[in-house]
Structures are given as C-alpha cells and as structure tokens.
Image 1: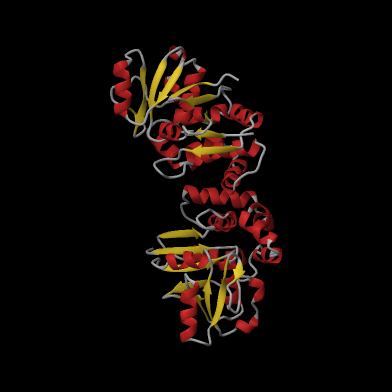
Image 2: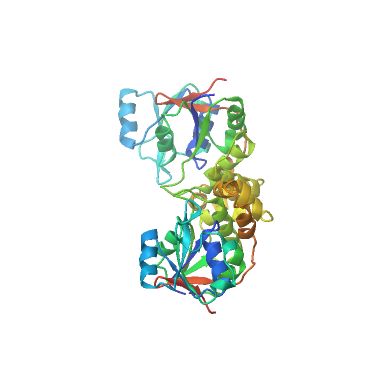
Length: 219
Length: 219
C-alpha cells in the first residue's frame, strides 16, 4: 500500500479518443499542450500522426481531429501526437502520480477493476472539465468509478456518486442534454460522437501515461 | 425581471441559527467577520447580545454559541451580534446582490416559494462550505432549492439537484454521516444540533441581509 494513482477523465472527448486509439492497436500516443509542440515533434518524426482539436474542430493541417469516430484499424502500430484544449493538459499535469491511467465511459469497468485490484494509498480522480468549469459528464464517469470502488470517499466523490446513481441508466442524456459542452457539440453537428462516447464498457483496455507517452497497460 | 438574488446557506450551523433566531422574534442580527469587531459593537451597544463560534465552540465571553438549541423566546425583540467561521463571512460577501436571503433546511420551502414568486434575472446560491472545502449538507440544501425552482440550471445546480434527489428522504444521514463537518460535530457531543438542523421546514420565515443587518423579510 503506497504511492498514488491518478485517473484522468475527459469523456467529451479526449479520453474517449485515447481509449479508442488504444483499442485499434495504436502503439503510442504523445499528449502535448500546444499545436506548436505537436508540429515540432512531427518535424523530427515525419512518420508520426498529428491529431487534436481547438474549439472542437480539427487543427488546420493535422491528420485527425478529436472524434473517436475518425479512428479505425489504420492506426495499428502507429504513434499519434495528440493535443486538445483540456484533456491532454490534465494528463500532462498528472505526471507526478505513481501511475496515471486514462478513463472514459468506454472503458470504465476496466478502470474500476484496476483500482479494486491495486494497493495504492490514495486514488485521485481528475475531471478535466472545460476551460476551468466543471463538466458534468466527467463527474458522471468519476461517480460511476467511485460508486464501485472500495475505500473511503471524499465529499466530492460522494457528490459524484449521487450524480451517477441518479442518472445511472441515462448516460446519453447526461452527455447530450445535461452537459453544456455536450449540447454545444450536438449543435456543431457532432451528435454521433456523443452517442459513441456514451457507450459504457465498449472496450476493456487501460491506457497509462508515463515518461511523456500513453500506451496500453499490460496487466 | 432585473437584479440578482443571493441565497446564502450554511446548514451546520450559522444559517440554521439565524432562521431560529428570527423564529423567536429576534429583531436584528448583525453578522460580523471577527470577534474583535463583535466586541467593538458590543462596547458601543451594551444591550446587544454576543453570539458565535470559533472551532465549533462558543467564543470566550460571548452570551451564546452557534447552536440553534440555545435559543428561545428570550431573544424576542433583541439585537444579536453574530460571528462564525464560514456562514457569517458568506453573508457579508454577498452584500452586493440586489437581495440576500438566508436559507437552511429549517426554512427551505419558504425560500423556494420566495424564489418562484420573484422576478430576479439571476439567482445565485452560495454554499458556505467549511474553510474553503465544499460542505455536502449545504449542497444538499441548495439541491432541494434548485430541484423545485423554475428556470435554467447551471451544471453545478444539476449536480446539487442529483445529490438532493438521491438522498431526498435522508437529510439526517447527510448531516450526521456523509458530511465530514457533521461527523466532527457529532464527535464533539453536538449530535442534537444535527438532528435539529436536519428538520425540514420547521419554520417559514425568510431572513434577509441589507445594510449590515439581518431581519425578517415581510412579504
């Protein structure tokens, strides 16, 4: 029993994209803060793929945006440089934890299992939110996690748990109606992304972040 | 439709005390930030009553502490100088709102009625919390209010509402078990205070704060 585990969540859509990339056999994801940093890495590694968004749209000149629906088995074995407004920042900021794992609704049961089998002294759940504001879809995912893990919960965790239990059977409603970020995405024609990101336990991989790189955690 | 309404909540125990004082016919409550300020006002007005807490205990030399159970009809017509760690600060900080009203579980339906009959452009609910941390009992009270008022809710309000709806029939559980501040009070021998503060709608008064003074709002 030692060290701390950080679980980073950005359901709409960074951590959903990461879980999807890992599912399709993507070898490495390099999360970066800025577009400039992404382009610098690309210059030195022309075979890498550029992915990410600003204002919910694919960055000009990038290969992919921030929609999990863009990705498929073409990503197998590839390295992706990834930058988004909130999610990739939260991942990078969590780097001092003993272990950083990436959660979305797509892999939430795998995350719960991992936490329950681990012996960390403390588990931090990092809800990325949206430009400094809370994002209710991230709190919903956190609430599902804390509802099924053993151990003492903080008051914030109990609040998240109550949210999850109240909307237990309506993840799509949380993402597309309750979430203001979700409503914006629907308004921008991205309703299919929401439907996809609301699927619970489509995958069972656990992406983890270490030394600047996200890869699949082999158990 | 203009101006903004602030609803200040500190269920354990400042706003529960204020609602109780108003119920017993207390004429005025003067919330102040510091013990020194309270003593200065007392010096100029020896007939005023000193009330408040530090570390959950009655301030040395004060007439009353921060337990609603200390108060009765002896307070009728009196002026009380009141200072607590979190609640009175939240009230004073809300002073720039068009109207500041004081809520606790004891008068929550009266507050809901007032909001639904009013035409403010914006309603802010201020959960006092405990030394910079959230207090789940304040969010529970806020959640009851937002669950029954008309209008658009922020994501924080929706989160509070989910908490209230999940624990709807267990206010005592929220205050005495889920709340860490509540558990501390129980541990300090103040379990009776919790039972009292968990009574919903014991009173129907609405205390309001203006020009430095809390009085009963006459409708």
